[in-house]
Image (cartoon, rainbow, N blue to C red; front, top):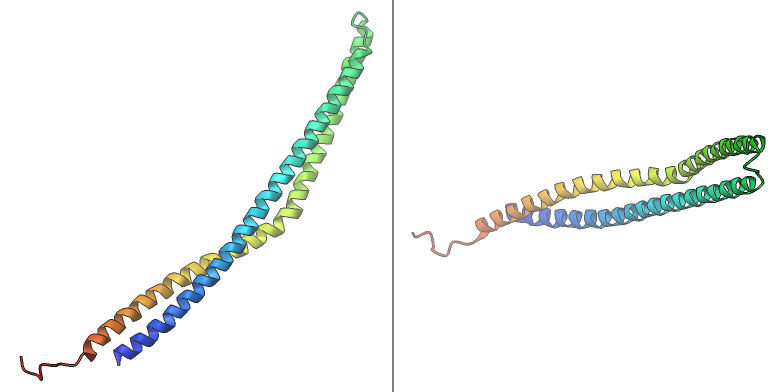
Length: 163
């Protein structure tokens, strides 16, 4: 009886192992795709932010150079006005960069949070499937051993009971 029970149990446990492996492969594939999407999106946003900052810095430098070309270095009043204008421009640029950094953070949150939630859900599923798979493999090995032990008891005794 142990042989049949073990054989059937091994068959069912093997089926469960294969099913869980297939599910784990599917979830892992989706998890990897979402992780790549998150990385690509983050990289794109960083590129956009760097490009914006470089653009602003170029605009600032051009305006400052334009203002400087109008200054008579020998005229203290003109030079002081130039310095005040540059400081005012710097403050405006810093405020604008701060606002844009905040907007980029909001864009990151809006675009990345849904993907991160999916990634977290898939990671939980993946962990669950890995645990279940380990249990199923243990069950498969136990039933395999039960089948082998049962097979030993099924072997006929050809000696006719004589030792």
